[in-house]
Image (cartoon, rainbow, N blue to C red; front, side, top):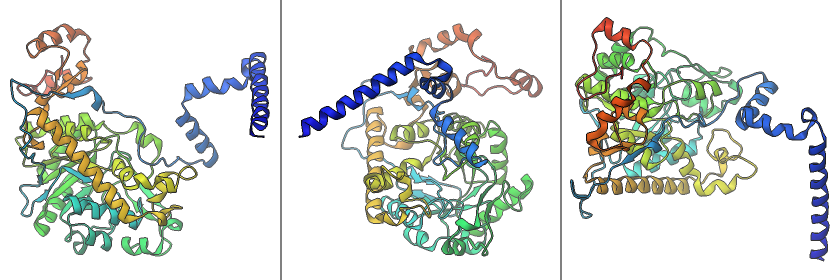
Length: 484
C-alpha cells in the first residue's frame, strides 16, 4: 500500500516538474516564472520583502534585532599564540576576569566578568518575565544588566545585584527617586540601530503595568525624543553630568551611536567629566527600527572602539574613563578582540536573547519567531520559562568567559584586561592601517617596507590634508600617518 502511494506521488511530482521545465524553456523571459530568480538575486530577498511591507502599509517596516549586515570584520583579526619568545600561562594560574568601571567615581562599579547585559527596555522591547530572567542571570554570574530606555521596574531592581539605569530621552528614569537607586547611570543620547532618531509606541500597544512603570497617562503614546529633554547645549549636558555625579556618587556615563564625529563627541564628554563612555556600533540591535537606520547610519563597532581608544590615549585618560563596546558582538572572540582594541568591557544583546530562549525555541517555531517568547505583548510571552532561561544564559556567559580565558593562556596573559592590540594580527592591510594592528602577511621587521610599496594605492581621507594644514595636527607617535 505504501509503495503504491509513493509511486503515485512520485509520478505526479515528476509530471509537474516536467511541465514546469517545459514552460520555463518555452516562455519569453519577460513572461517567464524564472524571472523571479534573477530579480530576487538583484534586489535581495530581504530588500524584496521590505519593499512589499512598505508597499502594503505606507510606513517604514520596523525590523527587529538590528542590521543583518556585519560591518565590523572581526574575523580578519587573529590572536597571536606564544610558545618561546614569551611563554604561555601555566594552566594552574587563574585568569583575572574582573573589571572596574568608573574608577574615579566615589562608588565605582566592579563586575566579575567584562560582559554585561545590553540595554533592553521593559515594555519598549522585552516582557517583564524576560527582564527578570536577565537580571537573575547577571546576578548569578556577577555582572550588571541595563534598564534600557524605561522607567524603574521594581522586579528588575530586586533581581539585579548590579543595575545600570539609563537616564533617557523619554524621561522615564530621570528623577532622583529612580536614578539614585542605580549602581551606575548611563545618559542615553543615541544607539547604534537608530542613531538619535525619535521613537514612538502607540497608546494602544501600552498595557496597564507598562503605563505604571513609565508614568504615562492613559491614552498617551510613549515618546522617545531625538534630544534629551532639557539638554539643548553642550553646557547643559556638562551640568547634567556633574549634577548626577554629585548627587549619586555612582559612575555616570554617556551612551551614543558610534559616529564619524566621534572625537568631537568624546571631547565634550571628557569636558563633562564622564566616568565611562558606551559606544554602540552600527551593528547594534533593537526591538524594531526602520531599515535605513539599521543599515545606513553610524560607524562599525570595530573602528569606533579603535578610534575612541586612541583618542583617550592622546588625552591621557586611558583607565580614568572606561570604554564600553557594544553592537554586533556575537562570539567570545568578538568580545576579546574589542577588549584588545581598547574596550574595558562589552555589552551583549542579541546573543544574550538567543541564549535566553535557546532550548525553548521549539515552543514557537516553525509558526512563530523565537523572539515571540520574550518580546513585550508578543503571542507567546507567557510560555517563557524564566528559571530555564536564567540557567541557559548563565551557561552561555560561563562558556564565553571560559573561551576567553583559554585564549589568554595561549597569549601568555593572566588577565583579560592585559590583552592588547599587540596580541593581534590582521590579514587586511587597510584594517592594519586603521587600527594599528600589525599585518600578519609579513614579519614585524617588514611592516614599514610592505606599506611603503602600497602608499600610492591606500586612500587619502577627504579633508585630511586641509585639516593638518589648518591645525598643524599630526598623528601621535607610533600611529600611522593618515595621509599614507
